[in-house]
Length: 433
Ligand code: SF4
Ligand code: SF4
View 1 (cartoon, rainbow, N blue to C red):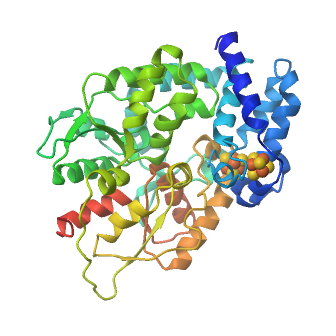
View 2 (cartoon, helix red, strand yellow; view 1 turned 45 degrees about the vertical axis):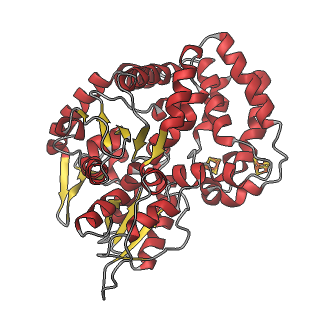
């Protein structure tokens, strides 16, 4: 980052956090504070730290960076802030400033700039990891798609992992361009790394659903990561590389909407791309941000799917929906996925307690603070178990990974599915016109 870019970010941060009135309303909704009771973990405490340290930012950015790392970027504080402080935006900018003022550790630079920011290298390594996982895993008898790692390394010991798919979606459908269809709409699909590598069936369901509704589909080759791991780590350099890469990939074709089935990708493209965009990309980023839309919102608002009343059957398995923070808190989208799930007459939809509480995943937060992440996830798991559901649906593949880990840890027999998979199943049953 140039000194000028850092100065611009600092100026905008100062204006934004001056709006915090220190009311403390964010305490009651912060899942992290709820676990640790540390004022430095809640938005008010973080903002005070940033204010207190901003004059020494250039002297010791590592101190502030450590505090800023402890955040799920869940947006609960922003959603409930009476003063309208956009905490997520502030935190992302502060992280970028802090890392602009210090050297990132070498391993992070390699991971973010030499691997993640280079989609071909990233994909090659993930394909190798898919082969390698067969050597290091210990299969879980009851759940063939989940494994634990044999080695006694503490990082792996407590976790259960979803296996990387034998074929990523990008190999199954490397490219698709159907042109406009009868209803005149054409949607590009941004796959996202987790769907591509762990849940290709979710992407295949998206295609099925779009085809069913006669929407033109464009899926470009060699898509990159949306960049959130780089933004969350404060690495503006890696982030901008990915931003430029993705903009160029999608600029090759005209389309009406850019659809995603990952709540985090939607929020990154619509909100975070603008925050850290270089000047020469601002117009293109604005254009793509306006076109980006969550698949559930697209189907209910733009396609206006007509769902027939569901026939009531007895003794149906119960299904719940977990609201990903990046859909409900970022965009107020919560009715749309429920409407699509309810179209499936093979399940009985039920609400659990606090469906919109954070699952504790928080992307890299889970990697750095697994025990806290897991404690937050346990509350979510307990609420799902108490609902009696045998299927947990959600609209974010990162939440899916966290739920899978929580259920596996507790030996729960609860399936995790994406809401679009449930809707795709409903279409086969003829529930939708
Ligand atoms: S709720 Fe908003 S205004 Fe109140 S302390 Fe938290 S960030 Fe500041
Ligand atoms: S984004 Fe979430 S975890 Fe971070 S301070 Fe706000 S409420 Fe807490």
